[in-house]
Image (tube, rainbow, N blue to C red; front, side, top):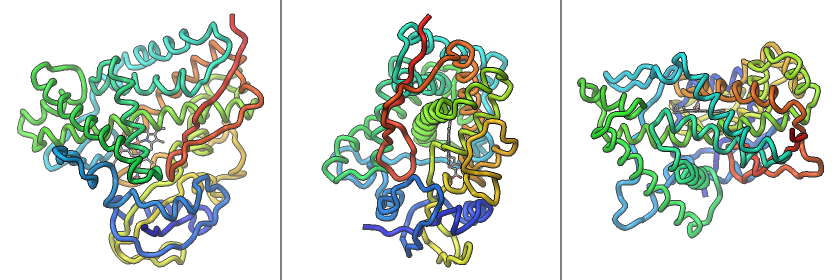
Length: 396
Ligand code: HEM
């Protein structure tokens, strides 16, 4: 069992100190040192679970599981910096034109429209399963060049990856998910091979083009980028959409405000990210001896940053426990992390949810939470993922 140094960003240290921790530390795993305890006004992570879980370090994903013949499991991840710019040695991949090009709102809007068309006559739906689950995957997979038919498969591998890395499975329970990781990794390698033979208008094609023009990036590294992005790029946005719709409908005056004035939608997206972030806790590793808010952190300490807690820091946000889409400074949240590892997909996630909210507010203004439901969340240390979100509306 591994013991973690846990920092509750709200009370033990401020959000600013949380940023300091993010900057002075790397994001790898490794030797644990001490536990400082958690004391926070918003700590949705089960503290005993967070304190004992050890998957961030050298046991994450399938790489330590013995799978005969499947040794080539662990991909080489690239460091990804700045917004959608991937850097390694002399390899620099610019933001692809198809991502934020003139027609991006159009095709993302089409995906959202189709998802609403599929449910609008029903008058009720599990919003999580029937809308939020697929929309971000369809968007991302188009960018990465994964055919729509493979969406369910890749989504289910994402669930396996999440369970292996942040869940609390027994050794036996991990085995089928570890096999899924092998399939997932091979899928990424195959995608690279396919794009070498048939170019597409997507990320692997761009990376291969860089490789061809002298960029120092191997095929496995390209597969590693895909392995990373195919997971990071949709689960969290699914959660953003489900958490967002839940909070907006639960705080009905905010939903009504969006209906009356859709120009509030971009700030509503940031307020959701602040108030109910998809990732409530993230890892860091101290690169040198340091101390944060009086807590000594020896070199090599594993640190769990409670981002969800920092987002409700009363010293940073006025009336921080209050959900308010009119808040002017919600963008100061730490939902996308901080520093050189800050989320590369944040603009994409925000654009997707903005488009979804615009369409939902326009076509389903009477949307409301189904009464009497109990909200349940997946059991893990970092992702605040609903298991279902039942909504209803008056069908036309
Ligand atoms: C609501 C949606 C999202 C949330 C809340 C989120 C959150 C995060 C967080 C907290 C980190 C760690 C940052 C740090 O260590 O400081 C991260 C990293 C990352 N995210 Fe996201 N993310 C989201 C969407 C996306 C999307 C859409 C993509 C891809 C298109 C993406 C790709 C990545 C990648 C590749 C990294 C690793 C960056 C690195 O280590 O350099 N994310 N994200």
